[in-house]
Length: 425
Image (cartoon, rainbow, N blue to C red; front, side, top):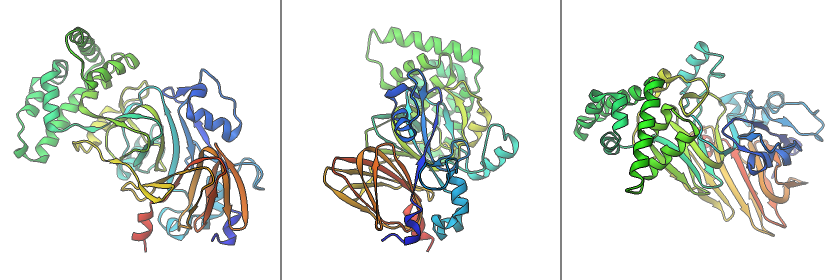
């Protein structure tokens, strides 16, 4: 049962929206729908709505909603700092008086940049060297949970696949040079992981460092060749993707570098997680996203923003192979948990049919709930609150919540990874 002290500390929140260029425009974006429901903001049909943020990061902080006696402009970060016990002592001890996770919804219309997020050591260094570009000293492991079909480039393809690319795509060999290409083609699996990594790093760095003029010329040749070949054969999925990306980012080196990455398609309810220093680019679709509280991004392609190619190419792990896909596991008949290998966060998806109820048991850390669809009742101790789609609620540690619905309810919960509490004992 909820501790009495915590009943009044369940807070409704107003989220924050980021209008990045790659977002879906107007009311077709889930982000825009949630913004309008959450805060009553007007949705402009020609404006992109890319990300809906729920958390304490300074680049998009949540505020306490009206009606809870704390004032309209009290930030969640400030409120937690003044009420640190809501985090639970293990979370407070580990991360201080702040949320260790950032919760988001993404509506992706066009490809995000080819990017990676630094580990803690590099993040601190980048913050010191380039504070105008890198805003905090934290790492940013993350997980994307598909709401619709969700497409992404993620991690490097295998050595055998890479050899195939260098044989089949002459335009890449033109950009990286015969010597770099030969270095990869001559490698044998028996040569060892370090040699493979060195060759991959060398050829990828050469590709990403190509001049704008060379990149534009090679992409034009590739486009022309694929157009001719499409009359004679079916283009591969990756070739079709590259032509699609070229329309979005003409002449961008990121277009041709897509051949180096795994092309991942998530079905609704599947999730993808990414550690520090792993290359990726989200391409299309809508997802729930959760990450450590950071906004550090090192970009190198498919973007009009600042590119830090040298930093990106030097920081990557160069691991190869298809990423793990999480399908979640049932916590109860109506709740599925997605548990990535990062201690800062986990995500639960709750789909409650008409007339059903479920319980989120008291846990030693804080949670943020997003009511995605439908309407229901939250019961915390003796208090009951009606919740509807677009509502966002902060729940302190040690708070048991019973949820019922007379229609149908879909909600997501973000919290500290439950494994953290077992290892922190």
